[in-house]
Image (cartoon, protein in one colour):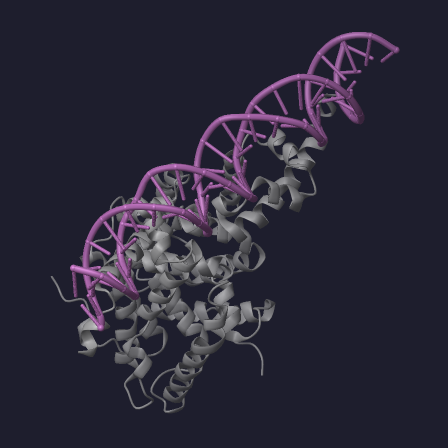
Length: 217
Length: 217
DNA sequence: CAAAATCCTGACCAAGTAGTCATCATTTTT
DNA sequence: AAAAATGATGACTACTTGGTCAGGATTTTG
């Protein structure tokens, strides 16, 4: 019976999840400084001291949350190889990132704020795992180019632009909703995804895969 | 002698500019809540009370700054007509926005933070001037499309994507610098501009104007 | 069931905050 | 130069905040 003793104190695990979820809401809406531990406590339905019991400090909670968020960034694009089809790979990556913006907008906002403020808690991550990831992806795109599978574009800037556009729908939702007069629904995200896939792929001299072509009418 | 009496108290005008500049730096780095009036005072080299003398409150200062920032958004693209050339017009707009990201990154960051937090002080602006601007631009792009000057794309999403990519270089500079191992210089911005112009214009079925084609080597 | 570990919380505190106010200094106007 | 307007600031206050701590409750383990 090993499992029982190491059940991670299911009470604690549950509470931690609850607190992290409340913190995500609060931090995404008001930023790190703009959020008080009391607000998180209210959101979680717990007394303030209980928050500090599970996370040693507000900063500790924030860092834990940030780590959870970074784990979300993992993608099937991580595993792409130079033998894959660039059109499919890039289109799927764009679609995947758009889905993230739709389903995890709060995580995206917290990440965006962190980077806006100079990414004090991410510098290490950026300089290690993230650079390695980037180098790998750049190499594969370059290989696609030398294989003549796609037009010569700068891979770094291409990735920046994909991130910029996909994250924009989460981070700037207030502006987008105001301008459209209504919030983005699932169908709108699908439209935006198709538009973006077409823009990027055409710009890379690639044909748009069937499944990202306009279906209806 | 009307002018002399209404010289706007050049002392006051100068101080206000100084304070706004200090506030821009502080707010862009730490957000509204994360910035104390004292920090702004230190940055401006003035006692705290003097800040409150010129701007009635921290919030008042922030709103004044935000208005200054919104005025910066004015663009030559505002004046484009359906008779203009879409390739030139869009390329110039992209280049102009990239220049803004390079020369006014703090303004871009403050705007981004404001929108991230739900744009509480911009809702009115969004719903009025901004929607009107948007409708006008969308109509012109649609007219370009019906004239057969460019491919059929959704004008709203196209504009969103242009904003996303251009602002990204200001707002996410911490991430970009980390990944590149060095900050973006003027020449790098020019490279990024060319890449983005090519991506967008090609994606709209437009030829890239001469001046945005790779020059060197 | 006893002991140990984990969980929970009210009372409290030191530090930092935005903003007020009374007073003084300088500049502008008459 | 007198009066008026504008500019400048130290001292103070009311309030919020993150975090501690001591002690109690509940659950888990032997």
